[in-house]
Image (cartoon, rainbow, N blue to C red; front, side, top):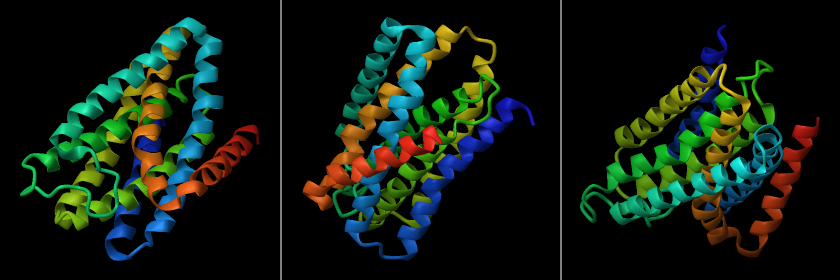
Length: 249
Protein backbone atom coordinates (compact mmCIF):
# COMPACT_ATOMS: atom_id res chain seq x y z
CA UNK A 1 0.00 0.00 0.00
CA UNK A 2 1.39 3.48 -0.87
CA UNK A 3 2.41 5.48 2.17
CA UNK A 4 0.01 8.32 1.37
CA UNK A 5 -2.91 5.88 1.14
CA UNK A 6 -1.89 4.30 4.44
CA UNK A 7 -1.91 7.76 5.98
CA UNK A 8 -5.46 8.25 4.72
CA UNK A 9 -6.58 4.94 6.21
CA UNK A 10 -5.10 5.76 9.62
CA UNK A 11 -6.65 9.21 9.51
CA UNK A 12 -10.02 7.60 8.82
CA UNK A 13 -9.51 5.15 11.70
CA UNK A 14 -8.67 7.96 14.11
CA UNK A 15 -11.61 10.05 12.91
CA UNK A 16 -13.87 7.00 13.13
CA UNK A 17 -13.60 7.21 16.91
CA UNK A 18 -15.87 10.26 16.67
CA UNK A 19 -18.54 8.17 14.96
CA UNK A 20 -18.17 5.39 17.54
CA UNK A 21 -18.57 7.90 20.36
CA UNK A 22 -21.61 9.46 18.69
CA UNK A 23 -23.25 6.06 18.19
CA UNK A 24 -22.77 5.12 21.83
CA UNK A 25 -24.06 8.48 23.02
CA UNK A 26 -27.11 8.40 20.74
CA UNK A 27 -28.34 4.98 21.85
CA UNK A 28 -26.97 4.73 25.40
CA UNK A 29 -27.28 7.32 28.14
CA UNK A 30 -23.67 7.67 29.27
CA UNK A 31 -23.31 9.43 32.66
CA UNK A 32 -21.89 12.92 32.30
CA UNK A 33 -19.23 12.14 34.88
CA UNK A 34 -17.95 9.21 32.82
CA UNK A 35 -17.74 11.34 29.67
CA UNK A 36 -15.87 14.05 31.58
CA UNK A 37 -13.37 11.58 33.02
CA UNK A 38 -12.62 10.14 29.57
CA UNK A 39 -12.34 13.69 28.19
CA UNK A 40 -9.80 14.64 30.86
CA UNK A 41 -7.86 11.42 30.24
CA UNK A 42 -7.85 12.12 26.49
CA UNK A 43 -6.59 15.65 27.08
CA UNK A 44 -3.64 14.29 29.07
CA UNK A 45 -2.88 11.73 26.36
CA UNK A 46 -2.86 14.41 23.67
CA UNK A 47 -0.63 16.73 25.70
CA UNK A 48 1.88 13.91 26.15
CA UNK A 49 1.88 13.14 22.43
CA UNK A 50 2.39 16.83 21.66
CA UNK A 51 5.33 17.14 24.02
CA UNK A 52 7.23 13.95 23.25
CA UNK A 53 6.27 13.08 19.67
CA UNK A 54 5.46 16.31 17.88
CA UNK A 55 7.08 19.42 19.34
CA UNK A 56 10.23 17.59 20.39
CA UNK A 57 10.61 16.04 16.93
CA UNK A 58 9.91 19.36 15.23
CA UNK A 59 12.57 21.12 17.30
CA UNK A 60 15.19 18.42 16.65
CA UNK A 61 14.68 18.53 12.89
CA UNK A 62 13.74 22.16 12.27
CA UNK A 63 15.32 24.10 15.12
CA UNK A 64 13.87 25.98 18.08
CA UNK A 65 12.91 29.26 16.38
CA UNK A 66 10.90 27.75 13.46
CA UNK A 67 9.22 25.37 15.91
CA UNK A 68 8.29 28.16 18.32
CA UNK A 69 6.98 30.39 15.52
CA UNK A 70 4.97 27.55 13.98
CA UNK A 71 3.61 26.44 17.36
CA UNK A 72 2.44 29.93 18.34
CA UNK A 73 1.14 30.56 14.84
CA UNK A 74 -0.97 27.40 14.86
CA UNK A 75 -2.44 28.28 18.25
CA UNK A 76 -3.20 31.84 17.12
CA UNK A 77 -4.96 30.76 13.93
CA UNK A 78 -7.00 28.18 15.82
CA UNK A 79 -8.09 30.66 18.50
CA UNK A 80 -9.08 33.31 15.95
CA UNK A 81 -11.11 30.78 13.97
CA UNK A 82 -12.65 29.44 17.18
CA UNK A 83 -13.68 32.95 18.27
CA UNK A 84 -15.34 33.57 14.90
CA UNK A 85 -17.23 30.25 15.11
CA UNK A 86 -18.23 30.87 18.75
CA UNK A 87 -19.98 34.07 17.67
CA UNK A 88 -22.03 31.98 15.24
CA UNK A 89 -23.20 29.38 17.75
CA UNK A 90 -20.36 26.84 17.97
CA UNK A 91 -18.97 27.88 21.36
CA UNK A 92 -20.33 24.79 23.13
CA UNK A 93 -19.89 22.25 20.34
CA UNK A 94 -18.18 19.76 22.68
CA UNK A 95 -20.63 20.21 25.52
CA UNK A 96 -22.87 17.26 26.31
CA UNK A 97 -25.86 18.91 27.93
CA UNK A 98 -28.19 21.62 26.60
CA UNK A 99 -25.61 24.40 26.07
CA UNK A 100 -25.60 23.98 22.29
CA UNK A 101 -28.16 26.29 20.64
CA UNK A 102 -30.79 24.88 18.31
CA UNK A 103 -31.22 26.26 14.82
CA UNK A 104 -34.32 28.13 16.02
CA UNK A 105 -32.36 29.77 18.82
CA UNK A 106 -29.47 30.81 16.58
CA UNK A 107 -29.73 30.51 12.83
CA UNK A 108 -26.63 29.00 11.25
CA UNK A 109 -25.44 27.41 14.48
CA UNK A 110 -25.66 23.93 12.94
CA UNK A 111 -23.23 24.83 10.18
CA UNK A 112 -20.95 26.57 12.67
CA UNK A 113 -20.87 23.49 14.89
CA UNK A 114 -20.01 21.30 11.89
CA UNK A 115 -17.21 23.65 10.77
CA UNK A 116 -15.96 23.83 14.36
CA UNK A 117 -15.77 20.05 14.56
CA UNK A 118 -13.79 20.06 11.32
CA UNK A 119 -11.48 22.74 12.74
CA UNK A 120 -10.81 20.52 15.76
CA UNK A 121 -10.14 17.36 13.75
CA UNK A 122 -8.04 18.40 10.76
CA UNK A 123 -4.78 19.39 12.56
CA UNK A 124 -4.73 16.02 14.35
CA UNK A 125 -5.06 14.11 11.09
CA UNK A 126 -2.43 16.20 9.30
CA UNK A 127 0.00 15.41 12.10
CA UNK A 128 -0.88 11.72 11.86
CA UNK A 129 -0.13 11.75 8.14
CA UNK A 130 3.18 13.49 8.76
CA UNK A 131 4.32 10.67 11.06
CA UNK A 132 4.37 8.42 7.98
CA UNK A 133 6.42 10.74 5.77
CA UNK A 134 9.71 9.31 6.97
CA UNK A 135 8.66 5.80 6.00
CA UNK A 136 8.88 4.39 9.52
CA UNK A 137 5.21 3.52 9.88
CA UNK A 138 2.43 5.32 11.69
CA UNK A 139 3.26 7.04 14.97
CA UNK A 140 1.48 4.71 17.40
CA UNK A 141 1.50 7.14 20.36
CA UNK A 142 0.03 9.91 18.17
CA UNK A 143 -2.60 7.55 16.73
CA UNK A 144 -3.55 6.32 20.21
CA UNK A 145 -3.74 9.88 21.53
CA UNK A 146 -6.01 11.05 18.73
CA UNK A 147 -8.27 8.00 18.93
CA UNK A 148 -8.61 8.19 22.72
CA UNK A 149 -9.36 11.92 22.62
CA UNK A 150 -11.84 11.62 19.74
CA UNK A 151 -13.98 9.02 21.50
CA UNK A 152 -15.18 11.28 24.35
CA UNK A 153 -15.47 14.18 21.90
CA UNK A 154 -17.96 12.17 19.86
CA UNK A 155 -19.76 11.10 23.03
CA UNK A 156 -20.04 14.59 24.46
CA UNK A 157 -20.80 16.53 21.28
CA UNK A 158 -23.40 14.07 19.99
CA UNK A 159 -25.20 14.17 23.35
CA UNK A 160 -25.22 17.97 23.18
CA UNK A 161 -26.47 17.94 19.60
CA UNK A 162 -29.27 15.57 20.56
CA UNK A 163 -30.21 17.76 23.53
CA UNK A 164 -30.26 20.76 21.17
CA UNK A 165 -32.83 19.06 18.94
CA UNK A 166 -30.52 17.99 16.10
CA UNK A 167 -31.66 14.99 14.10
CA UNK A 168 -29.80 11.69 13.87
CA UNK A 169 -29.23 12.44 10.20
CA UNK A 170 -27.49 15.69 11.09
CA UNK A 171 -25.44 14.24 13.96
CA UNK A 172 -24.11 11.21 12.08
CA UNK A 173 -23.73 13.23 8.90
CA UNK A 174 -21.45 15.63 10.75
CA UNK A 175 -19.32 12.97 12.42
CA UNK A 176 -19.22 10.72 9.36
CA UNK A 177 -18.13 13.70 7.29
CA UNK A 178 -15.46 14.65 9.83
CA UNK A 179 -14.14 11.07 9.82
CA UNK A 180 -13.84 11.16 6.01
CA UNK A 181 -12.25 14.62 6.16
CA UNK A 182 -9.78 13.30 8.74
CA UNK A 183 -8.78 10.54 6.34
CA UNK A 184 -8.34 13.03 3.51
CA UNK A 185 -6.33 15.38 5.74
CA UNK A 186 -4.00 12.55 6.73
CA UNK A 187 -3.65 11.48 3.10
CA UNK A 188 -2.93 14.99 1.83
CA UNK A 189 -0.59 15.76 4.71
CA UNK A 190 1.53 12.79 3.73
CA UNK A 191 1.15 13.03 -0.06
CA UNK A 192 1.96 16.73 -0.41
CA UNK A 193 4.95 16.64 1.92
CA UNK A 194 6.69 13.50 0.71
CA UNK A 195 10.21 14.61 -0.21
CA UNK A 196 9.82 17.99 1.51
CA UNK A 197 12.79 19.33 3.50
CA UNK A 198 12.78 18.24 7.16
CA UNK A 199 12.59 21.90 8.20
CA UNK A 200 9.31 22.34 6.30
CA UNK A 201 7.78 19.24 7.86
CA UNK A 202 8.95 20.41 11.29
CA UNK A 203 7.26 23.81 10.93
CA UNK A 204 3.98 22.31 9.71
CA UNK A 205 4.06 19.77 12.54
CA UNK A 206 4.57 22.61 15.01
CA UNK A 207 1.69 24.60 13.51
CA UNK A 208 -0.67 21.63 13.87
CA UNK A 209 0.61 20.91 17.39
CA UNK A 210 -0.06 24.50 18.46
CA UNK A 211 -3.60 24.29 17.12
CA UNK A 212 -4.19 21.00 18.97
CA UNK A 213 -2.95 22.41 22.29
CA UNK A 214 -5.20 25.46 21.91
CA UNK A 215 -8.13 23.10 21.19
CA UNK A 216 -7.39 21.09 24.33
CA UNK A 217 -7.30 24.19 26.52
CA UNK A 218 -10.32 25.87 24.93
CA UNK A 219 -12.71 22.95 24.58
CA UNK A 220 -11.67 19.61 26.10
CA UNK A 221 -10.48 20.67 29.55
CA UNK A 222 -13.42 23.04 30.22
CA UNK A 223 -15.90 20.25 29.38
CA UNK A 224 -14.04 17.82 31.64
CA UNK A 225 -13.79 20.35 34.49
CA UNK A 226 -17.55 20.97 34.46
CA UNK A 227 -18.07 17.48 35.87
CA UNK A 228 -14.81 16.27 37.40
CA UNK A 229 -13.80 19.62 38.96
CA UNK A 230 -10.74 19.19 41.18
CA UNK A 231 -10.09 15.67 39.87
CA UNK A 232 -9.54 16.89 36.30
CA UNK A 233 -5.83 17.46 36.82
CA UNK A 234 -5.28 14.01 38.29
CA UNK A 235 -7.15 12.23 35.49
CA UNK A 236 -5.29 14.24 32.84
CA UNK A 237 -2.01 13.37 34.55
CA UNK A 238 -2.87 9.68 34.37
CA UNK A 239 -3.58 10.07 30.64
CA UNK A 240 -0.26 11.86 30.19
CA UNK A 241 1.82 9.16 31.84
CA UNK A 242 -0.03 6.35 30.04
CA UNK A 243 0.74 7.98 26.68
CA UNK A 244 4.34 8.55 27.75
CA UNK A 245 4.66 4.86 28.65
CA UNK A 246 3.27 3.88 25.22
CA UNK A 247 5.78 6.20 23.53
CA UNK A 248 8.72 4.76 25.47
CA UNK A 249 7.58 1.18 24.90
